[in-house]
Structures are given as C-alpha cells and as structure tokens.
Length: 149
Image (cartoon, rainbow, N blue to C red; front, side, top):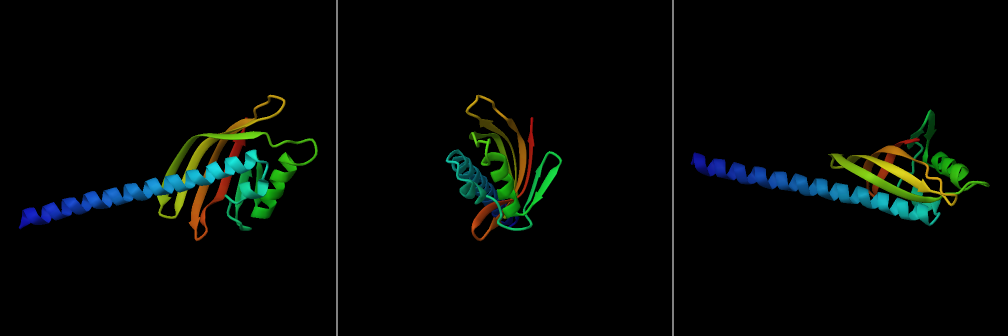
C-alpha cells in the first residue's frame, strides 16, 4: 500500500512540475510577444500601438534617469516629445538579452537591453527592467525602469 501511495505522489509531483513549467513557458512566450509587438510598432513609428503594451492607467510608472513619469497618457506624451517632436526621430528599435522571469500566474519581471539606430548612425542604447501584470485584455507593462548610456 505504501508503494502505491508513493507512486501516486511521485506521478502527481511530476505532473504538477510539468504543469508549472508549461505555465512558465506560456507566460514567457506571452510577455515576449508583447515586446515583439512593441518593437514592431516602434519601427513603424506607431507610438499608440507601441503604448498598447503598457497598462492604460494613471498608476503606470516609468523611471528614466532621475525622472519619474506617472500614468499612461503622460508616458505617451513623454515618448512623443522625445521621439516625435520637431528635430527628433524614433530610429529603429531593437530589444536584446531578454530575460523573462515569471513571478506568479499574473506577474513577470523582464530584464533586457535596448538599442536605437538613428539615421545619422548614432546608436543610443541602455538597459531596462519591466514589471508585467496579466489583465483580462492581456499582459501589460505596469512599471518600466529604463537607463541609457
């Protein structure tokens, strides 16, 4: 009888472990998909589509250097001013070195690097840390901390 219970426990532990691994793989894939869609939107110069990867809330936070931007609308305006206003360009965006770490079934941490390639050959670049949450309409960035060199 002990052997039967031990066998059942072993099989259950394997299936639970596999289920958790599958869930983590699904989270990683879904979060990476958001970032791919953001990169594509940026490279089409479509800031509104790029911003669809962010939580549309006044509680969204964006840290860059010593500056804090709070709220989806203010974050969009920050991007417009910095990359679409007169004398500025968006360049071509590339994300790399992505590390997606599921924290829970509805939360993930992402670390990575970004690089812009501008028409004049300059390549501003840096690192970022993102906190994603899962909402009914999908995975969204709720906090972005981006640094530049």
